[in-house]
Length: 185
Image (cartoon, rainbow, N blue to C red):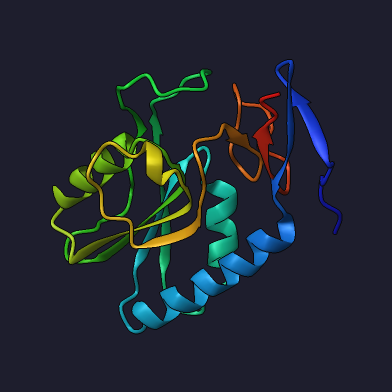
Protein backbone atom coordinates (compact mmCIF):
# COMPACT_ATOMS: atom_id res chain seq x y z
CA UNK A 1 0.00 0.00 0.00
CA UNK A 2 1.35 3.43 -0.83
CA UNK A 3 0.79 6.52 1.27
CA UNK A 4 0.82 10.23 0.47
CA UNK A 5 4.15 11.29 2.04
CA UNK A 6 5.48 14.54 0.49
CA UNK A 7 8.25 16.42 2.33
CA UNK A 8 6.19 19.62 2.17
CA UNK A 9 2.71 20.58 1.02
CA UNK A 10 0.84 23.76 0.15
CA UNK A 11 -2.61 24.01 1.66
CA UNK A 12 -4.89 27.02 1.29
CA UNK A 13 -1.96 29.10 0.08
CA UNK A 14 0.32 28.25 3.01
CA UNK A 15 3.35 25.96 3.15
CA UNK A 16 3.56 23.05 5.59
CA UNK A 17 6.55 20.80 6.26
CA UNK A 18 6.85 17.33 7.83
CA UNK A 19 6.62 17.60 11.61
CA UNK A 20 5.92 14.00 12.72
CA UNK A 21 6.75 11.18 10.30
CA UNK A 22 4.57 8.20 9.48
CA UNK A 23 7.13 5.93 11.16
CA UNK A 24 6.96 7.94 14.40
CA UNK A 25 3.15 7.90 14.31
CA UNK A 26 3.01 4.13 13.66
CA UNK A 27 5.44 3.36 16.49
CA UNK A 28 3.58 5.54 19.00
CA UNK A 29 0.16 4.12 18.09
CA UNK A 30 1.49 0.60 18.54
CA UNK A 31 2.57 1.50 22.09
CA UNK A 32 -0.77 3.20 22.83
CA UNK A 33 -2.60 0.07 21.63
CA UNK A 34 -0.58 -2.14 23.97
CA UNK A 35 -1.28 0.18 26.91
CA UNK A 36 -5.01 0.27 26.14
CA UNK A 37 -5.05 -3.56 25.89
CA UNK A 38 -3.45 -3.79 29.34
CA UNK A 39 -5.65 -1.15 30.98
CA UNK A 40 -8.96 -2.33 29.53
CA UNK A 41 -8.47 -6.10 29.50
CA UNK A 42 -11.82 -7.79 30.17
CA UNK A 43 -13.77 -4.49 30.19
CA UNK A 44 -15.13 -4.28 26.58
CA UNK A 45 -14.83 -0.49 26.21
CA UNK A 46 -16.57 1.69 23.63
CA UNK A 47 -14.13 3.78 21.62
CA UNK A 48 -15.84 7.02 20.60
CA UNK A 49 -14.07 8.89 17.83
CA UNK A 50 -14.57 12.62 17.53
CA UNK A 51 -15.26 13.42 13.89
CA UNK A 52 -13.95 14.45 11.51
CA UNK A 53 -10.33 14.66 12.62
CA UNK A 54 -9.96 11.48 14.69
CA UNK A 55 -11.17 8.97 12.10
CA UNK A 56 -7.70 7.95 10.88
CA UNK A 57 -6.20 7.84 14.37
CA UNK A 58 -9.16 5.79 15.64
CA UNK A 59 -8.90 3.32 12.77
CA UNK A 60 -5.20 2.78 13.48
CA UNK A 61 -5.79 2.44 17.24
CA UNK A 62 -8.48 -0.16 16.50
CA UNK A 63 -5.98 -2.21 14.46
CA UNK A 64 -3.54 -2.20 17.38
CA UNK A 65 -5.85 -3.27 20.20
CA UNK A 66 -6.75 -6.90 20.76
CA UNK A 67 -9.35 -6.41 23.49
CA UNK A 68 -13.03 -6.91 22.87
CA UNK A 69 -14.46 -3.45 22.13
CA UNK A 70 -17.03 -1.40 20.26
CA UNK A 71 -16.80 1.80 18.20
CA UNK A 72 -19.04 4.82 17.82
CA UNK A 73 -18.65 8.39 16.64
CA UNK A 74 -19.62 11.87 17.70
CA UNK A 75 -19.13 15.02 15.68
CA UNK A 76 -18.28 18.40 17.16
CA UNK A 77 -17.19 21.71 15.72
CA UNK A 78 -15.26 24.52 17.37
CA UNK A 79 -12.99 25.62 14.52
CA UNK A 80 -15.08 25.82 11.35
CA UNK A 81 -12.61 26.64 8.57
CA UNK A 82 -10.32 28.77 10.74
CA UNK A 83 -6.91 28.09 12.30
CA UNK A 84 -8.09 29.07 15.81
CA UNK A 85 -11.03 27.87 17.88
CA UNK A 86 -14.21 29.93 17.86
CA UNK A 87 -14.49 29.37 21.61
CA UNK A 88 -17.84 27.61 21.22
CA UNK A 89 -18.56 23.91 20.80
CA UNK A 90 -21.35 22.80 18.49
CA UNK A 91 -22.54 19.19 18.58
CA UNK A 92 -23.22 17.99 15.05
CA UNK A 93 -23.75 14.22 15.64
CA UNK A 94 -24.61 12.32 18.81
CA UNK A 95 -23.42 8.83 19.69
CA UNK A 96 -25.70 5.89 18.95
CA UNK A 97 -24.35 3.41 21.51
CA UNK A 98 -25.86 2.81 24.93
CA UNK A 99 -23.03 3.72 27.32
CA UNK A 100 -24.59 3.62 30.77
CA UNK A 101 -22.37 1.49 33.01
CA UNK A 102 -19.78 1.05 30.23
CA UNK A 103 -16.15 2.10 29.86
CA UNK A 104 -15.85 4.94 27.36
CA UNK A 105 -12.61 5.84 25.59
CA UNK A 106 -12.87 9.20 23.84
CA UNK A 107 -10.51 9.37 20.86
CA UNK A 108 -9.42 12.80 19.65
CA UNK A 109 -6.92 13.89 17.01
CA UNK A 110 -5.67 16.96 18.88
CA UNK A 111 -6.34 18.71 22.17
CA UNK A 112 -5.54 22.38 21.97
CA UNK A 113 -7.37 24.63 24.46
CA UNK A 114 -9.22 21.63 25.90
CA UNK A 115 -12.64 23.22 25.31
CA UNK A 116 -14.03 20.47 23.07
CA UNK A 117 -12.70 17.65 25.24
CA UNK A 118 -14.04 19.20 28.43
CA UNK A 119 -17.42 19.43 26.70
CA UNK A 120 -17.17 15.78 25.58
CA UNK A 121 -16.18 14.42 28.98
CA UNK A 122 -19.00 16.31 30.70
CA UNK A 123 -21.45 15.17 28.02
CA UNK A 124 -20.44 11.52 28.40
CA UNK A 125 -20.73 11.65 32.20
CA UNK A 126 -24.41 12.56 31.74
CA UNK A 127 -24.93 9.00 30.42
CA UNK A 128 -23.61 7.49 33.70
CA UNK A 129 -20.76 5.38 32.29
CA UNK A 130 -18.52 3.20 34.44
CA UNK A 131 -15.54 5.31 33.35
CA UNK A 132 -14.47 7.93 30.79
CA UNK A 133 -10.90 7.94 29.48
CA UNK A 134 -9.33 10.25 26.93
CA UNK A 135 -6.76 9.36 24.28
CA UNK A 136 -5.40 12.02 21.93
CA UNK A 137 -2.84 11.79 19.19
CA UNK A 138 -1.57 15.33 19.79
CA UNK A 139 -1.66 17.59 22.83
CA UNK A 140 -0.70 21.26 22.79
CA UNK A 141 -0.08 21.37 26.52
CA UNK A 142 0.99 25.04 26.51
CA UNK A 143 -2.29 26.03 24.82
CA UNK A 144 -4.58 24.08 27.17
CA UNK A 145 -6.78 26.46 29.16
CA UNK A 146 -9.57 24.12 30.28
CA UNK A 147 -9.03 21.53 32.99
CA UNK A 148 -9.37 18.14 31.35
CA UNK A 149 -7.85 14.78 32.31
CA UNK A 150 -5.96 13.29 29.36
CA UNK A 151 -5.12 9.65 30.02
CA UNK A 152 -3.15 8.75 26.88
CA UNK A 153 -1.15 11.15 24.71
CA UNK A 154 0.54 10.24 21.46
CA UNK A 155 2.73 13.35 21.18
CA UNK A 156 2.98 16.59 23.13
CA UNK A 157 3.61 19.36 20.64
CA UNK A 158 4.31 23.10 20.88
CA UNK A 159 1.75 25.67 19.78
CA UNK A 160 1.93 25.12 16.03
CA UNK A 161 -0.74 24.83 13.37
CA UNK A 162 -0.65 21.24 12.08
CA UNK A 163 -2.44 19.17 9.49
CA UNK A 164 -2.40 15.70 8.01
CA UNK A 165 -3.25 12.25 9.37
CA UNK A 166 -6.89 13.32 9.72
CA UNK A 167 -6.20 16.90 10.81
CA UNK A 168 -7.34 19.55 8.35
CA UNK A 169 -7.10 23.16 7.34
CA UNK A 170 -10.53 24.19 6.00
CA UNK A 171 -11.25 20.48 5.28
CA UNK A 172 -8.04 19.99 3.26
CA UNK A 173 -4.97 17.91 4.12
CA UNK A 174 -6.66 15.07 6.01
CA UNK A 175 -5.32 12.51 3.51
CA UNK A 176 -1.65 13.20 4.30
CA UNK A 177 -0.07 10.16 6.00
CA UNK A 178 2.24 12.29 8.19
CA UNK A 179 1.70 15.36 10.33
CA UNK A 180 2.83 18.65 8.87
CA UNK A 181 3.40 21.99 10.61
CA UNK A 182 2.84 25.42 9.15
CA UNK A 183 6.13 26.91 7.96
CA UNK A 184 6.08 30.23 9.83
CA UNK A 185 9.07 31.84 8.06
